[in-house]
Image 1 (spheres, rainbow over the protein chains, first blue to last red):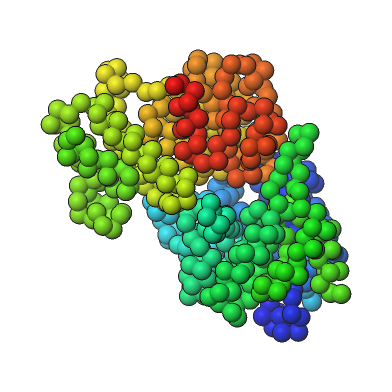
Image 2 (image 1 turned 45 degrees about the horizontal axis):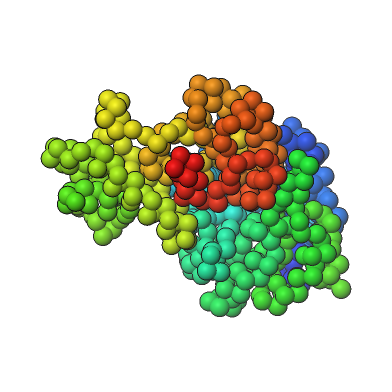
Length: 293
Length: 221
């Protein structure tokens, strides 16, 4: 089994992949369609996305399983196919990554708020177990619990993964910039609070994803590093906040803009860098060229 | 001002639903919005006085949310407490002894299944005294048009979380404006901005639930 932390010993900085969701839509996934179903109905499209990031030079890629929890799949009546769709996602990325690149199984939030009591902690836990089990079976090297905003849900996900496998766990939250310049998730969690909670639950790599661009990520990494000097940090930044141009959603941050800021992000203490919504293989390629040279 | 009514206001602002609810910790074991509203009505306190106190409390928590002093959990719990009060006040609305400010139709646009933001706005707007018609998620334009036709003079709010559904939002705004040019449409959601709202032709952009309330209240002032 390959490990991210081991790979970080030989390479100081690892490069991750870019967007999946926005990329799938570019290839014809319609809004309202289930992205994870494409792992069986449009296997080749999903494979080509994974492969494009490997070809761009990424050290690790994720899987098309972000919304693969039974609770999310229920919107499409696909909750009974959670295992199948997650396993398929892992197999596709594994095939694209080959033997030497890493595959991180993506697990996103369920979209329910626990404190409202609509679903039980147990049903959340069981759903994450199904995902982790299937992703491991499909051949991932680690699990990436991402875009979290609530401590309770993130920690349930981490514990569920740990209960079914020994894979390394990455956990990233999505922070917004507050009026006073600090960062919090929509549930009110600061980067520092996130670090303490997810490490205690069992994550060995921490970080942030999505959000509103590279600049914010630099400040978030700074805050994490004030309380944690050693845990590897993964950053997946959006290509800025989207704007509408002639009815099409356009992301403002170009590969060049990202590359110009990446040194600062690394100097602040980020160890694994990739993109989120709106980033493309070109963004990853530019990062690879900049970091590897 | 009556003590019971004041206490209802505190319960709304702090999100204390009823006696058995464990949130917030500092009010555990005490009566919540549920019990206190019943007591106030038994004391023959006018329903509109109760409603006014609740609307003010919702406004305070909404303002705090807009200032990043509280977050989604606090706002949701306040709205939940408010809903409890509304259950007891419903007969008075039906009898016409108290009135809502107007009708607000809300939904997440076609192709988008996210409901947290839409629900927050829905609850805060309702808590401010509006009648809310919630069309749910993945709402096709035709459904919005039908709701507007069924509810003349209503205001409309569109929500989206996905960057990929912003285009659907734009076309829904356009079609509503074509058929009902006088209907006010506001938009909101994570990928949105003042700028994109303007490009879509929406009448307003609400960065948070309280902004939606302020916008709507200005329209009827």
